Length: 306
Image (cartoon, rainbow, N blue to C red; front, side, top):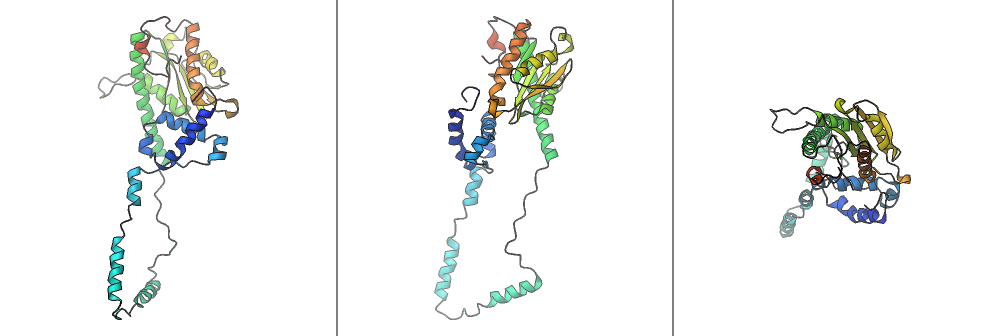
């Protein structure tokens, strides 16, 4: 939260949020705080945090559900039954109380009585393949929407290249590539919602996850004489000891692994690497300078960090 290493601020805020994360903040509530949850998970994944705070099991149900589950405090009914038994007690007509034993024997004979230690049936685990497909759908939607935004920003600001952060791939290089494809897809005029449309614009996109920062560089064929895709990516990755994973004239990918000992955390370094990518473009004369209309095309805090 302060600087590019774990500080007292990270420790203090993480500890302050811990009880809320465990007991109150249900999944529906947490959806609205993507960056906060990414930062919190990153902190809790560190061995130093685990050694003191232990494993954090996040709240799995809503507050309303918890209240409903806790509701069975309405036990006045059994008291009435107890009162009725007390009134009936003076009359010694309740002697045949050995019926339950007979019923138990009958049930034992038929094998109908469930064992006392029988556990309730567990819910089937979520299908990982289905979960992956659902996530891929969301990733493509996010990428397509960002593609339209980049197209509009480029038209207004005269940009040839654009550097920005993407959330949903969560550091996964394959998902980041799907996001890039969605950005570059041609706009379907008949679609209900416009998406893509930025295939003519060079770009470098970043996605931070717990384990690594995934990076993809794209240079369209029309701009390859001005900028080498691999060189651009290598320069940016080298600033934090990252490595190139795939090379190509139009698309290259790479990553920077989390390294707590060296203070390398994906969320912490992401903005600096976007800045490094833009500085490389400036040296090549491919980034607009001294433009009074900068605010027109800067639509995200992460796109042009200062």
